[in-house]
Image (cartoon, rainbow, N blue to C red):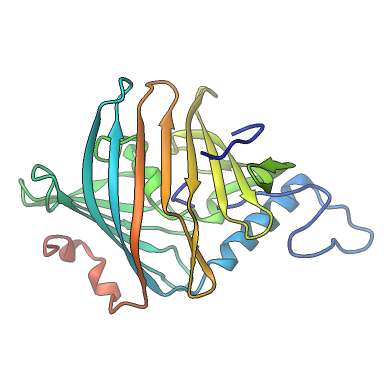
Length: 272
């Protein structure tokens, strides 16, 4: 786990900054950037660096730990496709154990509007819509919420640069982002991004009562196609319950034969 003088990650993943230094270049003469302007600029640059992947698939091993350290494991697959001028579409499919096999979760992320989410339950043979007001709930019993499983869109937050500080062997910019949606389960998030590649290293999540609810740590990054950084391990720890969930990622494959037809409500029922 990365040690920082303050603590984060998600999937999925996003952005953070530094006050007098601007990632995308020096500020124009005569204009001193505000913390909000700097935060937005860094968050935007972090997103831009990861655009253009087209689509990818991956395998995940999910480890759920209770406060006594007891574990249960699940295996699942992930498919992601970019949508021009909108948010990504993401599909999770559970393969093991038997009691969750065939369960599928679909996300249509949007830049400005609430994400659309659906859960296919094979035992009931029906698709259940997850409304925006319910997305703060636990995703399949894990410490990740449904809200955490979608793509992080810059436009859905107000951003503010806080400081620059070491994070492990790296130097990180630290940002605060505040969800604009009243349906979010979080009042704010504090994000650490490394200066070199703008990869999210850690995120602290604060609930609506301003309690430090969870911390996500993202580790074991590898670069694909000489450009796209993807994590090998993401750990979400719930400080109120003592539980944690670890996602171990493997078998990344880019440029597959996916198309938008693989990411529809109808396709959910055909997933195998």
